[in-house]
Length: 444
Image (cartoon, rainbow, N blue to C red; front, side, top):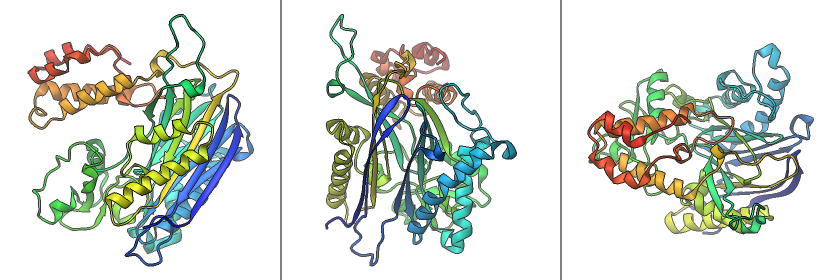
C-alpha cells in the first residue's frame, strides 16, 4: 500500500511580533476497496487575510461520507469569504469580532463573526449539495492570527496543538537559550468533539430534535452490552469509538458531535457551532500544528510535536515526516489509510513579543501529574464515590471558567499548588469535605 498524490506548500510570513514559517502537506489516502477515491481533505492558507498584513488564516477541513470531498472543498473555499464579509458587516449584523492584543476578546461565541462563519459555511454546504449532505460533511479547525493573538474555532475531531518552549537556563543565567536547545511541551488548544465527551453527549440530548442514542458498533451488533460508560478517548479506544445514532436505528453512525453538513446528524444534535479559544502567542511559543484526524488516529500529540521540534526551521520537512509516520501507522494497523493533512507553523519572536505569564507557562511534569489524577478519577471501581465526582467537577468547572484570553483549557495548567504526591489518597476519599481539603484549589 503506497501513498497517492500530495499537495505541498512552504511559505514565510511576517507578522508584527513573529516571523512565521508555514509548511503544509495534504496527502491523499489509500483505499484498496474503494475505486475512484479522491482526497477529502482541504486546507486554508491566507497570509494578509482580508488585505491586512497583521492577519494570517490557517485551517484544515476533513471531509467524510460519500460527498465528503465536495463538503470540504465548498467549506474551505467559502469560509474565508464568509469570515471577511461578516467582519466588514459586523455593525449591521450586530456581531463582535476578534482582534489584536488591545481588543476585548468576545465572550459569546455565537455572537461573533468568527463563530457565525462556521454556521454560514454549514448552511452553504447544505444548500449547494442538498441530499448529498444528509450523511456527508466535514470537520473544520481554523486559526485566525491577528498580531500575536491566536483565535481558534473548531468543529469535529481534527486538532490544533502548540509547542511551547520550557526554558531551562543555568542557575543565574537569565538569557534564553537558542531555539535548538529548547525543551518543548504540548498545549492542547482544541479538544476533539467526539462522543467520548460526556458534556457533548449531554448537549446533544438537549439540542436533538429526534431521539439520539450513543453506542459503539460492538454495542449495535450485540457483541457488548449497551452502555454510556465509554471511558477515556485513547488510541486503543478509537478501534471502536462511540457514535451517534438515531435511537433504535443503525444510522448515521458519526463519531463526532460537531461538523459542517451532516443534515441527518443535525437533527440528532450534531452542531455547526464551533468551540472557540483565544491564546496569546508569547516568546515561549515555538510551533502551531493543525492536522486532520488522519494524523492523530495513531499518533499522540507528543509524538507529532517531537517531529516538529526535530525539524525546527524547516516546516515542510516536519510536515513530510509527520505525514509519512502517520501513513506508516495506517499501513501497519489497518487495511487502508485515511487522507492526511498537516500544517506546521514555526514562530520566531521579534521585538515587542510578550514574555510568558506565570499562568501560561506549561510543564511536562504537570501534564504527567494530571494524567495520573485523571486516570484515578475515572477508574471504574471508584468513579462513583462522591468526593471523586466532586474532584472531577471542580477540574471541569475551573477549565470552563478560566479566563480564555491568555492560556489554554489544558487542565493540568490550572492547579500549580495541587499536591500530586497525594494522588493515592483519592482512593480513600469518602466525602466532599475531604475532596475539598485534598484539592486545595485556588481560583484560576
